[in-house]
Image (cartoon, rainbow, N blue to C red; front, side, top):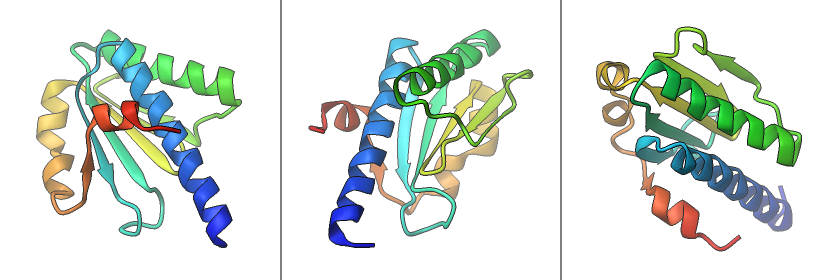
Length: 131
């Protein structure tokens, strides 16, 4: 990949992250954490972790992300898993994978500890980034 195409891909991923985080903020998602997995795994560059306060809240966060990306970018998730049970919804957008948990599921699976050695980005940094 040339420097120009790498820069375009990076900007595209940053725009995707920003839209996802904006929707999480608008739906009052809790404890947002972005893990930078670029270069660590072959299947994604970022994990976005967020907690919802109830199964309906978890679904609402997922719905808002899905609607915005579909409407603005014509972007569909590669897959969405766990929507019906809404204890842990996984939304795979390729470069970004969103994990929306109920509190007990997030604590049980503890992805933060599993990926403790990767860089972390704050939602504030993503929202304030100049695109």
